[in-house]
Length: 387
Image 1 (cartoon, rainbow, N blue to C red):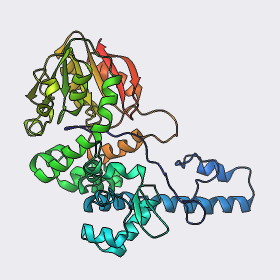
Image 2 (image 1 turned 90 degrees about the vertical axis):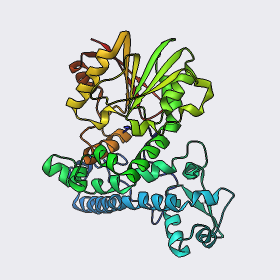
Image 3 (image 1 turned 90 degrees about the horizontal axis):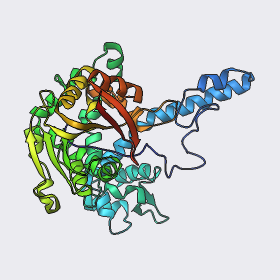
Image 4 (image 1 turned 30 degrees about the horizontal axis):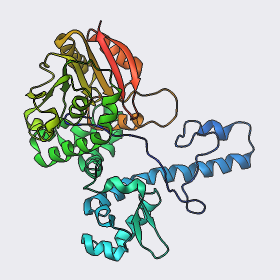
């Protein structure tokens, strides 16, 4: 989701979940962990009445626990907002000490920390002190790959409120965001500086941990021009140019987004890149490679065909379009693309797509899907050439 910048890796985990009494209920028999797809079948065939009743009780406990799951990101946001992780950088502290440092109520802060400890963000010792666990380190604000801004963006009311109105998407077939805020997603950001700043800085924070990994996974030419379309603050283009010294780059985005770019601070790529402002639904710059990272999932098929058609016409001979997005896998296993897809449904007109979806979309734009390359992140490289 990148009208600015990019990325996230991995799926939700339950690292550090408590065992024994009070632990999260297991999925009912016959159901994959984290999935309820086979629940009915697992409790309705070839079993006794007592087993059926036990299965229904287990299902009830499982579903209630899942419905309470929204409180964990709420706790994570609260801790991020008051800067708890920064105050744990030097070692364990009591809730009272943390409360004094953050200007919060120690009893309520303890309750938030206790929940975060169940997922391995912090740990509580026998003396009642809390320490930042390895999984919580990136919640600090001054460390490389900090995702504090990303957590605040993903849990901002502009994301949170539409997610609570998914039923509107089902009954009306439209986004909940526009129903709540009165204008489409990006139009709202264009007129609300606070929200725009939260979004763009948050997307950049999501992107930083994955950009070098994605750049390394792209099959790029030794020389030529790479155009990062909707490239935001330039994190991906920076890593592409660092890894490929023979390439030049164009950072293409709206003027208000380009104003926050970070490329000028990196002398090693000086003279090899230029910013260019514009609207990618009107045109895109000529280039040997067009990068589209977390862009197509924001938009419906018709808008994507328009954008990809501009890329096709602006491609130099032998050029390629690299769509860097999550590719939804088949089957019932958890995958972050399936979660992000509901965010797209709630707030935007786009969706996460399968490989077949991408092939069809690219074909309509005069392109041919040549291959899909995996990366160590949740995103894949969907490579296309002129048809």
